[in-house]
Amino acid sequence: MTQAQGGRTALYAFSGQGLALARRIATHMIADIYAPERLVLQTSERFAAQVPERLAGQGARPFSSLHDLVAQTFARYPRHVFLGAAGIAVRAIAPHLRGKDVDPAVVVLDQAARFAVSLLSGHLGGANELARELAAITNATPVITTGTDAAGLPSVDELARLRNMVAGNLPAAKAVSAALLEGRPVQVFDPEARLLGDLCNGDDAGGLLMPTEPGAWNPDAPGVWCHWRTGGAFPQTFRVYPRCLALGLGCRKGVPEKEILAHVAAVFAQADLALQGIAAVGTATIKREDPGLCAAAAALGPDLVFYEPKALASVTAAGQSATVRRRIGTGSVCEAAALLLAQGGELVAAKTKTERVTCAVALMPHQNLGGA
Image (cartoon, rainbow, N blue to C red; front, side, top):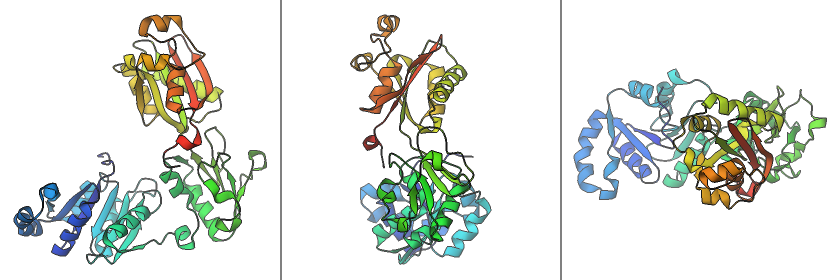
């Protein structure tokens, strides 16, 4: 399966009016336009002669069979927009649906740009957001039919996606939404307000979001548990991990990925930290070409940041090593890197080492989290 192309959007047009609309939309987002072969041949020369140079890359890609095309593109793009009838979109995507946690966003926009309909993956895939984005571009009316949105209630799975958090036990999000729609209280453990913000103040969601401490948690009732420590693994609990842990790594030359990952896992377990909460991994520039460390970092976090020895040496860190200072010019790698990544945060796991691997973890303050 081809990996999804970042934030690119696939725009499918079926008429001259739809193609003109697709080109208009493509001026506002990173998108690829697809249209029937006959339509592309009819309009390509005229389009190339009339549009400004900045739009020269917006020529449509021709297709002969929509069903064959979507079979190739459905998993490649995180966002799909069909500029035509909803029935066309439904028939094209139906064979490729796998589940709400993996399906991309699909929106239907009629060629007159009257309605932007969120058709598939409204919350997790971002189709509701895409429909609103298209509405802002075209002055269409966004059509959002997900239950919580229609009722003006928060959608916990969409909030997690918007805040770049890792969702666990996704089916429980449905139980949470059902409880809110039925007017039943939902227990919440979000002590730092990273997910729900001010929604637990009793004034929103009809006062149904009830702050609940772990000791009073009912494992058989719907709930939302948002924290960077372990816990909250219950059948009806939607578990959310904020990406707020900065992991600093160091190792000797040639240490394999497996050994590094094993040490990190042991440190996280001992410190009661959730691996899903890793936001980024930091280390020294000398490790830029280290295959084991780079592979371990890729498996652990979204980002890997390399720091010059001078930057690492500027950080006051307890875990100093005279040997490391002689070798690369700084006495601390893992602790200093973790603290630099955390941007003012504090260590929640100090330097811990084996014979060949060191790691430390710092907590990013809430205000430093993107999208929170």
